[in-house]
Image 1 (cartoon, rainbow, N blue to C red):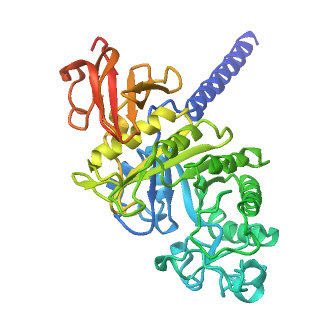
Image 2: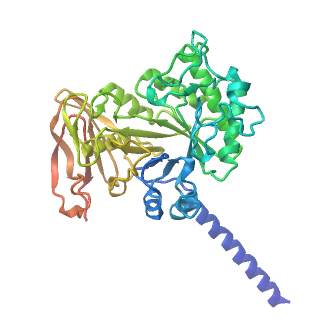
Image 3: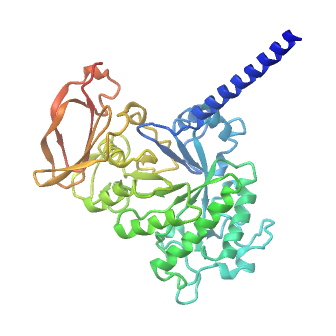
Length: 453
């Protein structure tokens, strides 16, 4: 009897140890990442083919925005192929929120981004939009349906009444049917062009003819959709925009006040972007700093910052200030700006001429630069009358010059090794030490502290 009791006790102890071991392993998997640079990727319908080789690159990112058509590209289950390599990569399916494209009615739902029910209900309990729910379409002052975009490349998209609770219900049922409860299901949804700041180049809807009215409508949509999707274990990432001004930031801050704030808030053009006539637009210092500071202001959502230019790696161009720049200089400027403001909960993306969706934009900088934890928030020093921003990390420093003037001969606190695209793959001991740096206009400098190597 004594032997049997001891055996039973051993079994119990082993079971307890296994529970603790499993719990510890699970904790490791769910613990927040302390990576210096957190990245995301956008993979839309066109562009590079996804195969087993491409999956290895995609799996390097922390978050992924992808369209439904790729779900069976690798072994008939692309999402699982990515997760097998990197279980922590969060996958978000690209969908539309405030717009309806009237030409997707009979297209295979896997190739659609929107709810694709203009005249075809696709089994929806509330019927189709055009015939059964004309009240869901926003109207201009002349009583005509509002186009979402004046840009001819995006015609045929109507702007919908996202503040209408019935439209919100319609949207939820459609997305649950098409994505969340179907084969395309992933970690979350990326809802394009929806947020408290109206970023549409559209006909002005008479119902929401002030920024305040739009904000209230958009926030009610985000709050309800986030609640419904969280009930279905699905995260919400909204592509909002508006961080370039204090007015926009104040509106975006209202997301923190929602009962159901989104999991991720995107800014589609931060620090440097391709909008405008130049090959790149480097924002004015006040706009740049507004986006920078907002990274620590929103408390309940992660943030995802897009930056982009009109040239590709190896190419050079002329910016909006009339100055030459290279692709890598713009990348490092945007990356340096991100590092100045990242509070550990922010994500970075950079792309070139073909923009996002058509190319898999992975750069060695993402895995080769590790400055460790920040020692504190960024600081500002006046150098020759210009503000130079810098931040100390455990293993180095980041300096950024967002002004239109070059800064020369900046003294460092100690000897450092200046990183560059050319020496990233070299042994750190082979990079010469310096105590003084130059930071030209709209450039960033990344440094490693002098430590025993």
